[in-house]
Length: 367
Image (cartoon, rainbow, N blue to C red):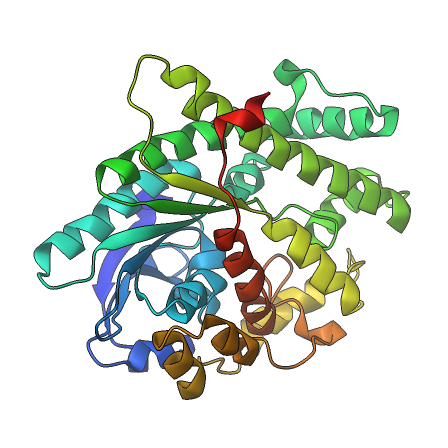
């Protein structure tokens, strides 16, 4: 997809979705966009959101779940960095795969190197892997591999690596993550927060795919079981491969001077969607969700001045509470068939902070 993209520098006011992102109007904010030549869709290329006297800068890389331009509102990785009182430099782009994260990280540091006085880049937030699985479904043979995975879920047996789409994708994502983590450590990052791939039974598009593969014969309970099992297999394989490559494969090499944290985003999406009664959307609901994204503007979801002030003063818990105000209703969970709403993004900030406060991936976890 990269060859279809063309750079475009703009301001938030130039696009309806961007104009609603109040964070982009902060003093000193900078944004560079990119446009798909075929679809004319606008994506983020680089966005810098400064905080005066920020102790550090959070760098965000990845896909649409971190691309505020594609979504039309600040996503949880950006809100996380802001709630910590950090400046945020975001080079995530909707539609990107794991092999594009290295270029995104390099672009972020090229910008930081060119702007003296910017806070040091310490925290790296990575959201990737979903498109590696989604785009693979464009190849006919991969449906056979996916069917094999589903069949093995039914039999409650682990699929062989050579005939498992999920395990192939997991290895690819883990390899890409290891490469970008090594680069991040070399560039001075001290902490990396990696989001789990959000493959779970609550995602409407995922439910629709399984329902169609079963020719409409699968029950909602069966679809939930299959997707939860596949999501767990994918993320456990990514984590295991990541641990193996970060530690076992680095014998004789200097260890990474980087704390790596795995944030189980899928589990929190599952919990929030289930609590709102939006966990069983499928084929029937998907067209309406797609139309909702195309024809309805996204209401603005700014970080309130009070929350920003609280986070800047170090009172993260108070700021997070304001970010999480309100209860999700059934029609407030999904922006479209596979992207969460602005409100759900806000609800993911506090769990992400809790993950940062916990332990990282260690070599002990291998045993």
